[in-house]
Amino acid sequence: MASTRVTMPQLGESVHEGTISRWLVKPGDQVVEFEPMLEVDTDKVNAEVPAPVTGVLKEILAKEGETVAAGAEIAIVELRGDAEAAATVELRAEDARPVQPAAVAPAAPSTPAPPISKDGGEHRYSPGVLLLAEEHGVDLARVEGTGLGGRVTKRDVRQFVEAQGSTAAPAAPAAPSPAAAPSAPPRSPRPAVPPVAPAAPPARASAPAPAVPAAPPPRPSAPVPTPAEDQAVPLSRMRKLIAENVTRSKTTIPHAWQTQEVDMSGVVANRNANKPAFQQREGFSLTYLPYVVAAAIASLREHPEVNATFTESEIVIHGSVHLGVSVGFEDTLLVPVIRSADSLSLAGLARAVHDLATRARNRRLTADELQGGTFTVNNSGTFGTLFSYSVINPGQAGILTMEAIVQRPVAVSGMIAIKPMMYLCFSFDHRVLDGLQAARFLTSCRTWLEAVTVETPIY
Image 1: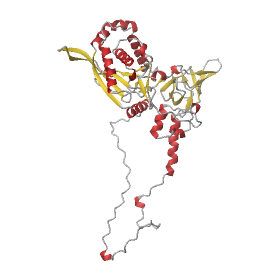
Image 2: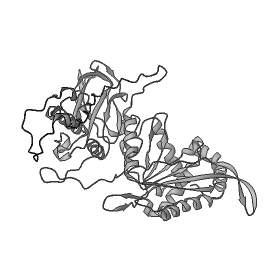
Image 3: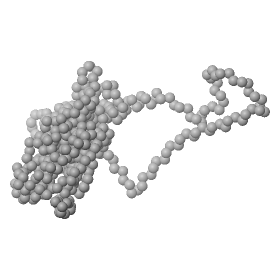
Image 4: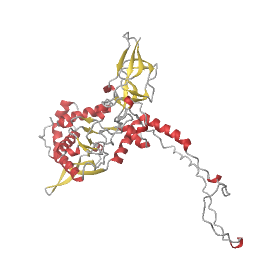
């Protein structure tokens, strides 16, 4: 019977290796083409890798926890009933499906100058490795890399931390217990002290100062009982990545926040006029999100300093708008990216948003579609929120949030009118933008939306 050697896929343009986090099948199990076979963890995404063929898993060549370079053999599948000669099948990155992809799309994070490797060349570390090393206070120059080309992986950092912990433990001298301290003066010679006068007769000697009792050693705290009605939910890999990303954002980026109220009368009228024909032509409903995305893109073109990334030595202003759109799930959040979003029409943006959201819910996005964003639009208003203070994706200068569209009484030419109103909330990196620049950008977004009419073309 013929057999197929399965190789590690390349899960992204800049991803050259992955760590096998879990095998979903074991030797002797039947594997079906395109069905999940294992989970692979990289610094950018955690993905389900499907089987390239249908057969029986004969042997696992790379164990769980092992970091493997892209293209290396990881398993052998026996092809039952196939008389073809053994062949090597390389999994394609586009076939790998993210398992609850990361909450925040990593895009050109600000990092210090790359360290110099031991051979004198420049050695670059991935954001995940840098974050882990900073968390444990590890000097990466002391870590021996086992990745492709000698790269240091997160597994190398963890093993280094464990090794340092095991060697440091015996070196720490045990402090003497207060209870074991001798009551008599020590026999070792004391340091020289100035001579003192002879002691007075015992009858006139002053009363000695009362001895201060030694503090008893602390007792180990008793475990806190968990109430029967409580439930402990273990952290998933994706929840840990989300926690790392938002913590990094809030501890490294000085957030500031502004909001403006937008009259959405023109947008509502335009959508209502185009919705039936759009539904019939495209096969899905036209929503308000593409209008806000288009407003953000037009404003980024008018204020290019907002479409930027902060580094320790400069601010990089991006020439293209790669727009991230937040997509929420029950258990996680991800931000797929629309490449060159500034080249699309309103209908094109609606099509791109619908495609990314649909494939995100079906877990068919690739790692490259979850990185490289230069700005993000969030639509929390779909859940009825009125104000949101969104967390900025590391590597970007801001995130724009559209809130719920609500009928509210407003003053128009001295009279009260009921209009569909919406708040636009803008969180920005104060290292890149000041309040004046942020207000100008937000005003441009509002002006664009309020200029939409029934006649505004969507194609």
